[in-house]
Each structure stands twice: as C-alpha cells, then as structure tokens.
Length: 235
Image 1 (cartoon, rainbow, N blue to C red):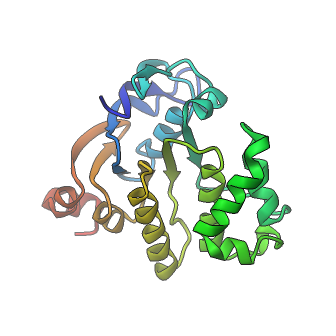
Image 2: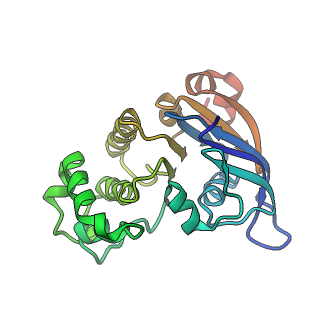
C-alpha cells in the first residue's frame, strides 16, 4: 500500500481554470519523491492540493490507505501531513522558540518537549532560540520551517521549493538535512527547481508538464534521461 496516492487530480484557482489536469503520483513508505517540471506546470498547485489548501474538482487523494480527498487542511494535518510552503513559512516577528511552540497547535501540551527534541536535532536552532526568525539567514529559516512542520510529528513532509533563493552552499546543506531527516524515517514529497540536485537525493521523481504527469522513474534514471535533461535540466 502506498503511503500517499494521488489519482487523476484536477484542480485550479477559479471556477473555469484548471492547473492540474489529471495528475497522478504516489509516495511509498520511506521515500524521497521529487516533482520537477517547467514553471507554471502545476507543481506547487499539486502540493497545495495534497495539503488540503486547494480542493480537487475531480480525482482522489489517499493517505495511509484512507481517502482524504474531502478533508480540509486541518484534517490533513491531523491525518499526518505537514506542508512547508515556499514563502512566508516562518513568523518573522516571533522568536525561533515561539515559532516552534506555536506550530504544535494540534497538541499544545506536548509543545515544550517536542521543541526541546528539535533543538537536539538542529543545534543551530538551539543557539538562536531567542532570536527573531526574521534575523536568520535564508538557510536557517528553511531549517526552522522544516522544524515547525515536524512539531506536529507528521508521517509525510511536503516541501515546496525548499532551496528557493538559497546560495549553492546553503542549498547543499538543506539537501543534506532533508536526506538526514529521511534516513531517520521521514518520507518526503518535494517540488524543486534545482532538479539535478533534488533528483540525486531522491528515490523517485515525476515530471509534470501543463498539469499532467509526463514521466516517472528513479531519481538517477530521470536525471540521466537525455530528453528530460534537455527539456528541464539544462542539457
């Protein structure tokens, strides 16, 4: 049984507009899965649909064998999905610690213990726990955003363009953090523009074009495919 299964997803932002036009993907337990494709293909829309931020016009979403198609974002979070958006993913005027504690909204009584556990996992956050989130570097903010997602103890992490705007070294560090998180048992579904690097750390990948799933395969296989390299990976 797949951990996540999206079948024939059709969704958009207006009554007549369809960004997703029958997209289908799956995530198996323990995997990192990356979705790549051109700008405007519907990659981020797909993640929002999975997270419950955008309702499907048709299609189905199952998580851990349960149909969550009609669940809203809160219901998906309770089911075990954590979504880290590309932008505005931390509260800049709150401290690092306040960001973490606030993120345990499903189980506030457990907030302190979970935050302390994340400080052990990410020592950088511990040293900056009293700093405002807006004072962090781009890479540090992304680590904080991932940690905020982990405060709900999810069973699948959804990452939308996690390395957007980061320097090459910060992006490499973030990919390392994602791989480490996965090795510790967290499945990951992410959308990435840094396709070569993302596919290199992924078990599988999908190519989405114009709202449709055009290709699927092992990360290394997709990265080596000459047509995909020419169209999406810069040759």
